[in-house]
Length: 71
Image 1 (cartoon, one colour):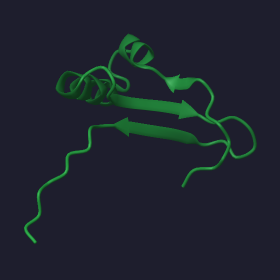
Image 2: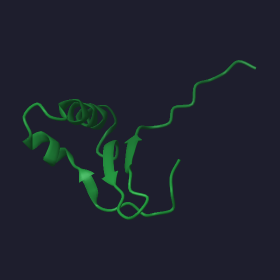
Image 3: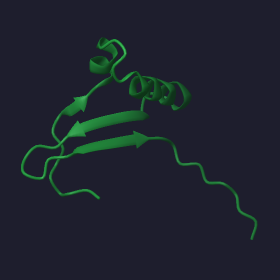
Image 4: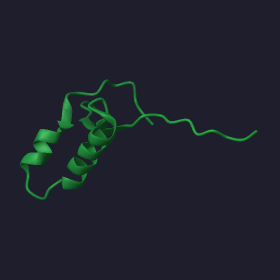
């Protein structure tokens, strides 16, 4: 569920995660693998929301592939 509050700047970027040793490496690896597989328009983005509602938004961008279904 998402509130209408617009997200602030990205909370965690690949550069931020990559600079920490051991912390968040799974997110960095996932982001890098998605970019290698699908290109620079894909990956993981984590954004913090400010204000009363707060929260964190995680967006994983991957291409949509329609699989044929026999009718």
